[in-house]
Length: 344
Image: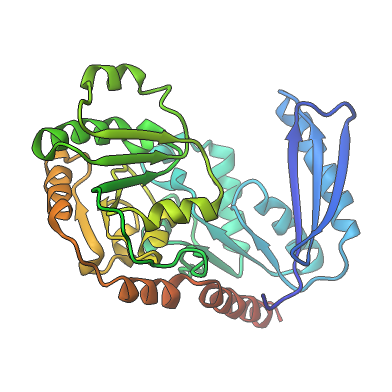
């Protein structure tokens, strides 16, 4: 929106017939270089190919002022290399849930050592929540932290007058059970069916293949449970606009975009109080419940099955103020300029 941006991305491709391939495109006025390298199970050969590709791609990019790393590891190593060799400042934005305990136990010693170096040399580290920053600091990743929340397209996710008479619940995610607790939501759906009878619950983001046995066991008779595959953003917005309430029953999170997109559509949210969710969750925009508490989820759903009015414009205005493209670009622009001052 404000700066000239070049995107550099490297990825393995198991279908690649040759050792490497470079693709260039100008997408939305953004110069985009994608380097494809042949897949290998040898970690040393993989790194050699990534480094070789990085050197080749970066040589194609004209002069730049600031590097914005969109994930700390491993691509932060390339930013660190440019900082040490060309004195190029870099900032890091991060939203990975893997830094939270107990998931953080899976991070290897070498990754921790290198990550500490990357964070220490960054001008700014911009996690989406203070809670994530705390988890990263507990791992010894000490740096200059500045929270920047996730962005929402507030022109796509807008409130409408909902004419849908059916109580409609929506959940959008990867549907990975260990993370999102889909099985827990399905069990609560059965309890809700026993209480109110007919309603619709949409699970968007995948299929029901991992839940067929549970669905058979629960044997829904009046409730309509839908599983909808991954869909484009514009289509997802329509589903949100037609919903009565959005539910996230996760075991761990940072700051999920889907909650912010629900707010932007004027849809109340029921979510577990995990990660950084409570940092951007006004009291009258929904209900925060305890992790794994089916009792609290059921009570909250019963509440919203009877509640018919929401201040949709207030919720949308909050989303525009805090998460719109304009808001987030101003925040990142500030850290770009600050990083140049720090570097000088």
